[in-house]
Picture 1 (tube, rainbow, N blue to C red):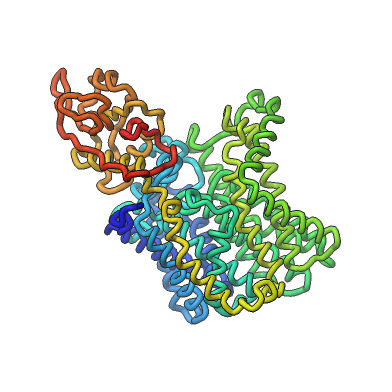
Picture 2: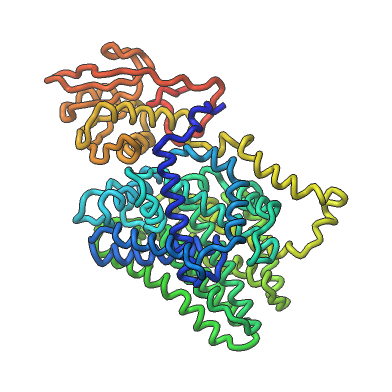
Length: 615
C-alpha cells in the first residue's frame, strides 16, 4: 500500500500545478482568439498551443533574445481574450470544463504529487525543458551545456512547460505531467461531444464520464506509465485525435457544400502541434494530410479545390518542421537521433524485424485487434462508397495507420541502431498513438445505435454507473497510476536529496553504485539537476565497483548508494557520503534506506542492487 503521506502534494507541486493552470488558460484564450471564438474549449486549448509554439519556436531559432518576452505577450493575449465578448468562454464552455474537472478530481488528487520518473524523462525530456527555463533560449553546441541525450529533439511539450514556468519561482519539474493530464481531459470532452453529436452545449455528466473512461480505462492503448507521465505519448495521441476529427469534419462539410474554413484553420494549428512533439510524430502529421488528400479524391465535386485546401492546411506545420530542421542542422553536430549510413541499414534483417513487429502485435493483441477491425470497417465503407462522417473518420484512421506503420518499418530499417531496430523497439508504444483517433472513430460509428436495448430495463441506471466508475476507478489502480512511487524510484530520489543537502552547485561528485547497469545514474543526476533543491551544474561520474570507486583520487566527494559489506563505520545496507581528505576518504554522513513495505513489488526499470534491493 502506498503511504498516504506520499500522495500529499508539496508547495513545489502546487506551484507547478498553478503554472499548468496558467498555461492551459493562456492557450485556451489564445486559441479562442485565433479561431474568433468559433471552436469549443477543448479544441481552443490545442489550437492556442499550436499558435503559441509556432511563435515561440520561430522566435527561438532566429534570435537568442529571451523566450520569456514572447511567452509573456502570448499569455497576456490569451488571458485577455478570455475577457473579450467575442472570444470569452460561454456558459456552456465553463459548464463543460467544470464537469470534466469535477469528475476527474479523484484522478487529479492522486496525481497531484506525481514525480518525474522513467529513463527518457531524465535523459532528454526534463533536461530540454529545464534548459529553456534556465536560459530563455534553445540549446546549441556553442551555448551552455544542456546535459541532454538529444538536445535537438522537438520542443513543443517543453514549450508548454516553459509557459507554465512563467509564473513559478523555480523550475516546475512536474509541469509536463500536469499538462498531459489536461490534454487527456480535453480528449475526454472531445469524445463526449462526439458521442452526443453536439458542439454548442456542454455534454451531460454521464457523457463526460463516458469520455473519461474512453480515454483511460476503456482505451486499449492507454498505459498509465506512458500517458500519466511527462512522456510525449499523451500529447501525440490527443493531438492526433483532434487532427483526425477536424480533417474528417472539414472534408464532410466541404463535400456537402458547407463552410469548413474554421475546421481547416483549426486543423492547421493542431498539425503545428503534432509535427514537433516527437521526431516520429512528423509521420503522423504527414499521414493525416495524405489520408485527407485521398479522401478528397472521393468528393462529388471540386476535388481539385479540396486538395489545394488540404495542401494549404499543411503549410504552417511544414514551415515549423523545416524551421526546426534548419536550426538543428546548423547548431548541433549531433543533437538528435539520426539515420544510419545506407551500408548499415538492416535490409537483410527485414524478415526478423517484421517478425518482431508481429510478436509485439501478439503480445498486446487487444489494441491491434480493435485497430484492425475499425480499419476494416473503413475499407468496407469506402468500397461501398458510404461516404458519411463516420466513414471519413474511420478512413482517416486507416490512412494514418498505414502511413505511420510504413514510417515505423522504415525507421527500424534505416534509423534505429542494432537491437533497437532489429527488435522493433517500442512498436506497441508507438501504435498507442493511434488509440484515441481509433476511439473517436468507434464513438462516431456507434453513437446512433439504440443503446437502451443493450441495457434493457437497467438503462436508466447506466448514467449513474458511469459517473460512479469514473469517481472510483483511481482507487483500485493506484499502484499502476503512481508507478513513480515504486520503492527503487523512492530510494534513488532519497539518495539524490540527501546528497543535495550536503553539496553545492558546480561541485564534483562521484557516484559509487555497486552492481549498477547504467539505469540508476540518470535518475540520481536528474533529481539533483531538476528537482528542489536544484544543483543544475553538478559534475558527476559513476563507478559500479566499490573498490574502483574508492581508488579514485580525482573527485573530492563520493556518494555510496549501498554498503554491500561494512565500510569505515557504514553499516551493511546503508548509504553514505564521503569527503576526500588528502590521500584517504573520510566519512561525512551515513543514513539507512527506508524499509520497503512487506510484499512490495516493482518493475525492473532501475536495477535493484545499487539501491540495496537485491533479492
